[in-house]
Image (cartoon, rainbow, N blue to C red; front, side, top):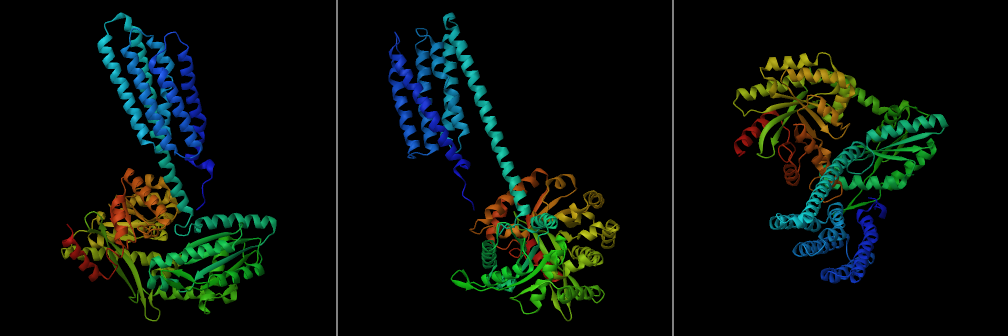
Length: 635
C-alpha cells in the first residue's frame, strides 16, 4: 500500500498551518500586554494574563516545531487556555460595569473567539477542544442572562446589553454554521469513501488488488486499438494454477489466499509498468503485454513458469505450485479483445490436457479445450431426458434468529462416464449453448414442486430461491414460464424468489425492467445475485423492482481474518447494508464459512445469510431434515 505524501497527510497540513497561526496569536497577546502597560488605567487581569498567554503560545509553537506535541494536544491546550481567559475576561468586565468601557474591551478581546470554533471543529480528533468550546458558549450565554437580570432596568447599562446581545447572536450564528458545515463535510466524506470503495471494487480484485476481468477488458480494448494504429504487437499470457482447487480444499481457504496473493506479487514483479496484470477468477490470471511479439512473450512465460515454482512458506509448511500458461498474440491470432482472451484460454487448456506445468502458444488445430467443451455440450443436451440432472437445496437463515427463511435450489449433474460434473463447468456451457433455457425451466418447475411437497408435509414456511440466467431473463416467454410453474405447483408468487445477476440486469436495462415488473406483478420476489462483482450500479437498485441484494461470497470470505483485504470487504458490506437500508432492500450474505464471519455480518446489520457454516447444500431429504431441525431449534 502506498505511503501518503506529507502534502496529503491532514496532521502534517494542520501542523504547518498552526506553525503560522500560533505566532500570530502570541504576537496579539504580547502586543496587548505592551499596550496595556501604556494606558492611563490598565486592567490588572490583562497585565498578567496577556504576557502569560503570549509565552504559552510561544512554547506551544516551539513544541509543534520540534514535534514534541501532537496537533490534537496543542489544539486542545490552546482552546482550553484561551476559553478560560476569555470567560475570565468576560466575567471581569461584567462585574466592573459601569466603571469600564465594556464595549471597547469586548471589541479588543473577543475578536478572537471565532478562532476557537475553527480550531475546535475543523481540526480532526480534538474532542476535548469541541467540548470546551461548547461549554464556553454555554457559560457566555449564562453570564449574559445573569447580567441582563441584574442591569436590565438601568439605562446606563443599555450599550453593554446591546453589545452582549450582538456577541451572543454572533457566537450562536458562527457556532451553528461551523457545526453544520462540519457535519455536512463528514457526511460527504463518508459518502465519498463509500462511492470510491464501490467504484474501486467494481474494477479491482479484492484479494490481490489486481484489476479484475472488467478492468482488464477495458484496458485490452484500448491497448488493441492503439496497437492497430501503431502497428505494434500485443500478447496475452493466460495463467492457471495447477491443482489449486485440490490444495485449497485440503489446506483451507486461508492457505489458498496466501498462494493467490503471492502469485499476484510475483507477476507484478515480472511485468513492466506498461503491462496489465489481472486476476480473472479463482486461480486464473492474465498478463497483457504491450509491444511484445510471440517470441518475447514465450520467453517471459518461461520466466513466469519458473518463478511460480519457488516455494511459498505458510504456517510452518512449504507450498509448491506449478502453472499452465497459454499465449495468444495480436495481430497474429486476432485483434479482438474477447477472441484473443478466449484463444489464450484455449491454449492454456491445451497445456492442462497435456500434463500441465508448461507454456503453449495458441494453435487452432490443437484446440482440444474447445472440442472438450463441445463434447460436454453434446453430453448435456441429453442429460435432462436421461434423468442425470437433479437439484440440491441449501437453506438461508435469518441471522438474528438462526431460523431458516429461504431455500436455494442448486442444479447438479451426474454423468455415467464423466461422474459428478461441477456446475462451474456445465453452467457456462449451458449458457453459451442456449441449453440454459430448457434446463432453467426444468429447475424452476422442480423447485416449485418440491416446495409444494414440503408445505403439504407441514414443513415450516420458507421461500424457494431459484437462479435465473441472462438468457432465461431475455427469453420472450419467461414470465409465462414462471407463471406456469407457480400454477402447476399451486404456490403463491410470494413463495418464489428469483435471483438474477448484475450483468443480466444491465445487459438490456429497459427490456429487463419490463420483465422484472411483470414478475413482480405475479408476486415473485426478485434478488440481485453476486452483488458487488459486476456493475455495482446503485441506480438500478433504485429504479428496478428489486427486493434483495446478495453480497458475493468473495467479499464475505475475508471477514474475520487478520489481513488488509477485510478492511475493503468490511467497507463494501457496510456500504451495501447502509444503501440497502435506505432503499428498503433485504441483504443476504453468501458463503458464510466461519463463526467470525457470521458475527461480523450480524453486527453490520445483514438480515439473511447462507453458507457451509450454517447448512450445506444437499438432496431434498437432507434439506428437509435440516429445515425441521433448525425450525424447532431456533428461538
